[in-house]
Amino acid sequence: MRIKNVVKVMNFHSLLRVDSARRIAERYFGYEKEITDFADNILNNRNLILDKKVIKLNKKDKPLNVYIGNDLGFCGNFNTNVNDLARKDDGIDKIIIGKKIIQGKENVLLSMTKEEYPDYVPQIEAILYDAIQEAKYSEVNLIYNHYYNISHIELVKKKILPIDQLKEKEKKEEKHHIEDFVIEGDINSILRNIIVLYLSYEIKIATENSFASENIMRQTITKESLKKLDEIEAENVRKERKIRNNKNFKKVIENFTNLTFKDEE
Image (cartoon, rainbow, N blue to C red; front, side, top):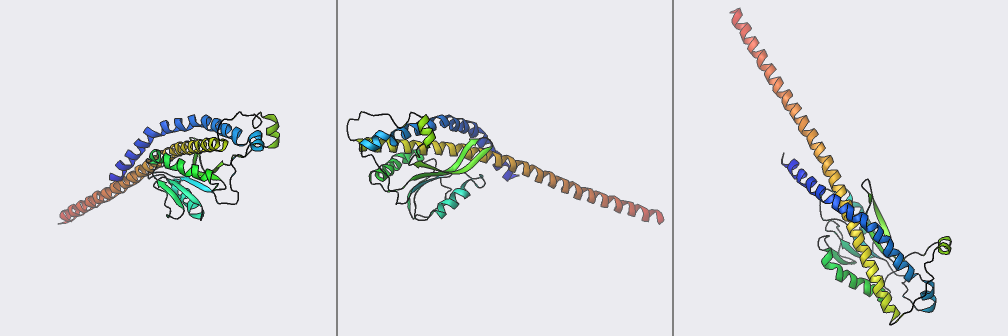
């Protein structure tokens, strides 16, 4: 069966990728926490907020959303849910990563495949830098399928800017947000570059995480498809055997009938 061979190839490719993609995503779990803590400690630092006129977002403006899908097929509803959110988010500026995200051109600042994403990083960072400098957005969000573990993948909408400050109880227990800094140069320029670096890295982490989700889901679906195809093949063999047995039985009856008629003569 030709379609079975195609699914086998897809399943094999997913098996090759899935373990590597999973390891990369899990390695980034620790990196993500560290870089978020780093950015949080600077952007929510009390001394910088009080002593310096640090960058503020425009809370009355629209958000900027980054939607991450995939480039490959055989992933079930992997892209469907992301697409649904992208369509509902009318009037919101968007960056699209993944060619399976079907979205009109309205409010789409950039659109690329996952494979093209590394080449678009400078353009993404330029958009982010301009957004921070001009205070264009109220927040920046990531929408993608998040890999937690091999059996838990979930569509998430993650706000990566502003970084929510710790709760009051946690603030008292943490040393974050109170360090003082000696700053040389333009504080706003320094902070803009730090924010852009942080946001860019968060997008990279989410893209790698989404790639793990994509391959796990693809491997699961192709495996289930192969099982279903085997069941269909087995059912077809059973039907063919039944038809063949019926023909043979009919032939036996006909031969028996012919022999009976000859004996009577």
